[in-house]
Image (tube, rainbow, N blue to C red):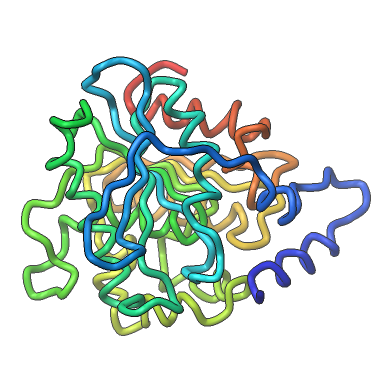
Length: 291
């Protein structure tokens, strides 16, 4: 449990006067919610999406939601994002909660994990008529490792045909909201590895950065919002500011938001102020709405 242990150690080192961020236990113990449908996009057990639908016939705007967990199969995955998926559905969004093969499962790593995300996103087109999804209004929201995959999913249209990760006509993603995620593998892989160990190098080896690092696939023509808790010791706020600057330098729009008194988990906890006052407005803006 390297990921949990490193975060607990970091939290234990917080100064006494600082507001205590959410604990791992609080994050893992959140109430879970049942989806409206479960859709397989491939033959492997992990190649599945849980769909949370809002009331009404639609067509509904779609949030592609990608969980974190250091790319490791030992963590729960979909159950940990089911609470925010249900919250978003209650607010009028269809949520495409993506599972993918993680380390410890056959086929995980490069290229399998990335192809899973690509195939899961592209499956929206086929399911849109049945479930009332608006395939032209899709954004991606990802947490931690899932933040990296969300940023990558939005930029994969820049991949050359020679890449094993290439897919014809990828579904366009209008915007990305990354929650404690990593966008520049070259610059920040060592920081991510400080919490997660060597998992990123196993999923995206350095020799694949031209295909797996969102920073290498800019400009993507997709606006990005990087959200990090003030006390995020997995991906500190400076990494989000740095990546946002890289995105802007490439000609795309990007914002970086630091959430005061929050750690790595509050942005994906529906009962936390960070979710209600920062993440939800960012998602609304990503759809072109006024918060």
